[in-house]
Image (cartoon, rainbow, N blue to C red):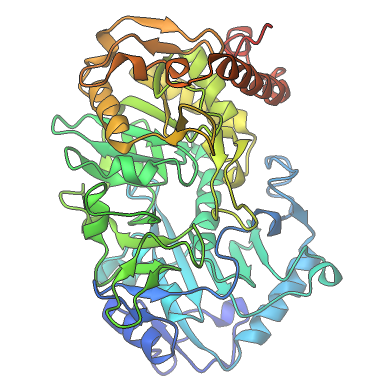
Length: 531
């Protein structure tokens, strides 16, 4: 609790007349407070379960960046980074500070960035105990000495119970997620979804790190017994968390990563896993990581036994779990590693026409990275009820404050310096499109990844895909060869050819916006859709 005379510099933000402050409470106290306040229930595995009253996914149409001189020339203004004027932010902030009066506040002071050279001190201010547990679980927790001298560089203020007046107030709805780089403030109003907290900080790091020549990436990372690291890029639901939590390897981070001259480092201190259909058999590390100190969002539990029903999508398909990275056995602490030998681009192909794995040349890698093809999966964003084919630059377009080519250029430079192998992995559908075919079996994907990671797959013969050009292995240890060529898995070959060309044309159309930025070789590395 707040000591007499100590306001933790809240007065500097204009936050006054509050009921009290609880700073960096341990998980047990945050759980006790959440239960006492009726914010959630305990599951049989000890995790705190919360059911959100609204916005059970991200709200990309409600994100804004304050248009200030310090970022005016650098930001990629447009659909992703929608500008608002400082006066509107000041109005919003006055509403927030008025709303906070008389409230009990929870503060988490910690860090983002495991490498001390590039770590950023941050602060999360919450009115909900469970959201403060979310922050303390997801970000890097300070030592007592670090906490004593902690001075936040950026502050997130989450007030989910404060709803905006939409268009009448200058916003699109009751929700507002606003970043002010000049004041180093992030305001989140009208949505209870915890993911907005972590992704807003990720967006900030995606601005700060590239300015230092560091690749800021939407990817997970793990490490083999020989200290070889691997990166797994992909949007939510494509398998970043699942595939990086490999019992045969050590987890470094599950979602957000930096790559400097010294190697890679996790930006966070925890994991945010999608847990729909979670099972102990398919994903034992994640299943067993969820216990006391963890948080379950929108997971249905039995009213009597309190056993989680991970198969239920009654509330949303986007059910989530948070847990500290150290809940995963043998995770790497501090979360840092060497330069990656292998890089995987994960795509949930709803068309069902991409190979389960293919090798990319450097030019192909840039093309696929800028394209960022995948499917938006049900529940990940508000209003998405079934997979929709989409292109998300750098496999994380909603979180890019700079132009995508900035990130692609830095990544290409790192890959060339380290001669990293790059692979495109389809974790989506096979044998037909969504609704006809079936989702790739995780056992198949793991076998393909294992072959790439141990170097065996790089030694086999490859053949270019006739439409997409990517290099398809003719064989893979432990995998039936007929599964490697997607056309073989379709009963109707003509339907496959038609669907492949359809997706290829979507690639070409999407990449037109990069034709003035990418070189001739990169532009020529896309699909060929004659006929």
